[in-house]
Amino acid sequence: MKRLDRITRMFLALAMLVAVAQLVLAFFVHVTERARPTGTTWVVPPTRTYMQAFGLSEVLLTVVIVGLVLLVGWALHRGRIRGEPGAGALAWAAAALTCVLGLIGFAYLFGVGLCLLLACATVRRRPSTASAGGGSALHTGASV
Image (cartoon, rainbow, N blue to C red):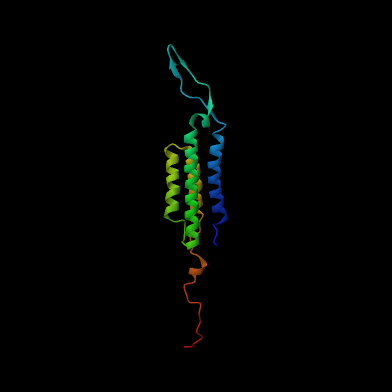
């Protein structure tokens, strides 16, 4: 079984670590929600953690991040097994999409996208040694 290079696996692991860190931080980082009008004044609710305020969206964001990392990892591994040179279009597209989503407004996705782009960039471009020879392994021994 052909494995990905150590540096490629490191960038994939770092991307996964960002996903886990994002979920863990959601339990500790506090946010202030918008003030609400009440009769004659405005009431500011007490601060809550991201998980308390936006629990469903935090879980969905984590699922999306993990899904993108797994998709890129799977595409890179599949290309490696098939002996394809480079990362492949699927891995590059998923990594680029992750960066674009990060630029649009999902800050955690931008860091993950950079890690995924670096993972794609570190995949070896040369084909596997089995197909690199180009000639026949048999030698007839006949002279000319």
